[in-house]
Length: 121
Image (cartoon, rainbow, N blue to C red):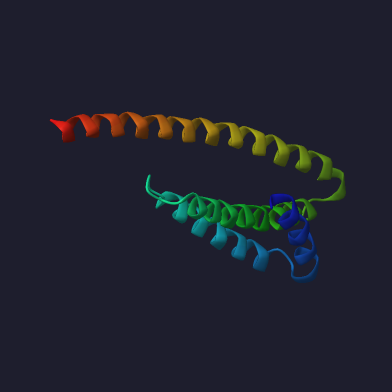
């Protein structure tokens, strides 16, 4: 889904610029994130899959036009440096986000165990 939407986002960027696809992408990303935030243990797998698909449509729809617009705003001699900076920040922030998400999942698991013990008592 991500690869397909990235390709379509590039074509959409060529036609209408970065502003419209980015706004739609951020709105879909927020909607997908909220859907995942509201997922419970009783949520169906179909709900989680749909929420993830919405998120995976929104992310490349927002990121591809924004990155292209940012790189196009640089003078040609700085294009390689800009691309390197974007790729580096993407990797660093991806690693930080993974660590934060893993920590939050672990915290949620611990809190779930603690609340079950209090509920049983």
